[in-house]
Image 1: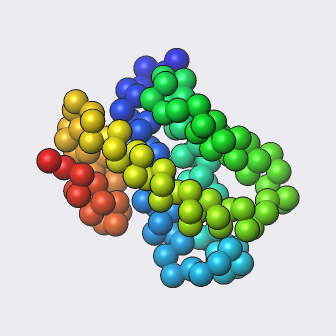
Image 2 (image 1 turned 90 degrees about the horizontal axis):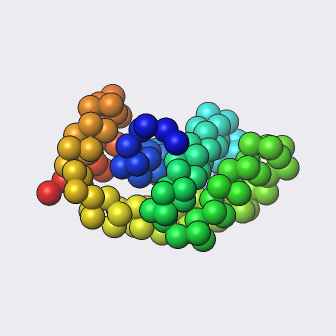
Image 3 (image 1 turned 135 degrees about the horizontal axis):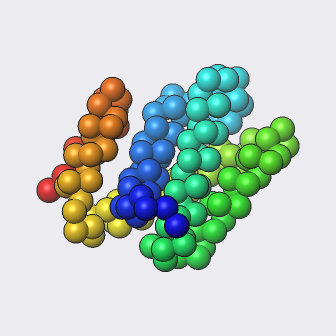
Amino acid sequence: MSKREIDFYIFDVLISIIKIEEYIKGKTNATELLYDCKSWDAVMRELEILAEAMKKLLEYDIVDSEKRKIVNFRNIIVHNYFGIDLDIVWDVLINKIPILKNEIINIINSLKNKNETIECFMKDNHYLPFVIKELAKLKD
């Protein structure tokens, strides 16, 4: 296991979600996202990062086993990139990601060193005002 603190993986999930929300802003469907190739690629990358972090959270029993679907979805993205169903991706982005965000925020709110970790991630993401804004909302 990595020596990296588990709290950091929790925040990795949140940061990826915040970035995904930013990248899909203004898009109304999967085709629009796909045709904005930079946004599409960015979203796919953040889904990969999110799932890798979620894999660690599963290993530490931080999230329920139902979240294994996220890791499986990442495997489809990585290994079957050209066979990805756009409607499934869009459904994940619009319907599943907001639910996951709320769950992750609930986990973050229960962390002992929440504010310290938020500060660390604010420093690491200082160049992304939309991330800073979302993280600031979580501070006590």
